[in-house]
Length: 268
Image (cartoon, rainbow, N blue to C red):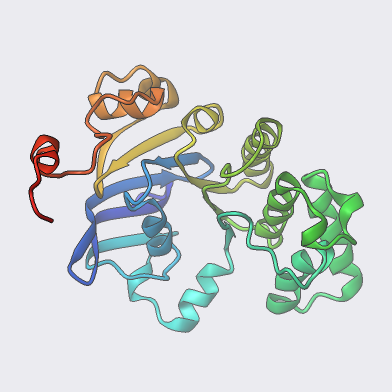
């Protein structure tokens, strides 16, 4: 494995039962970079994150993180590796019965022996980094959508991970919050010296902050390149996806028999 790559996904296929989700995927994530995996709903983006995090094992191929083949690790080895990862889940996934401070302190207490005084300083530092040190006493129910996502981001970086994974970080946000989260993803990655994977279908916001993009459709990588290369691509699927066009390879209608035949009384 190249020392410049934190992650290498090599010829990976995966299926749920007999339903193929990923088909011979190859991609790399260089250290220190922000890489986006884009595609429509159900194309396999989140499944890729689960394979990288070791929640799932590939049907074939290999997923290497920091030189280790994730699918071969024991439970204790996988736990050790996961401590170097941060995860921002869809919609934040904060613990609803814990306040902001306790949400971020949770994994510090779980995975370290740090005294409470140090944990306090670290929690406030992480909250300050996302602009919310003044909200540490609030409950998740008292937060706006954008604030909740920022608290979740502070929790994701609580242990200064080498890898931060974002699963649809822009979903459900207003334009201002969306822009704030995008800026934070880029700035925190660079400030921490981390590596980030952003799984999203929010094209325009992602292209402002990422170093490289993989486009996935029907379980395969259909295009890859820098943000500018993706924007200027003439590949039909990429062009349709980037510019949100209704006409293209991704059809509006679900596959079916002729509409006229249905209207003429064909039985169901």
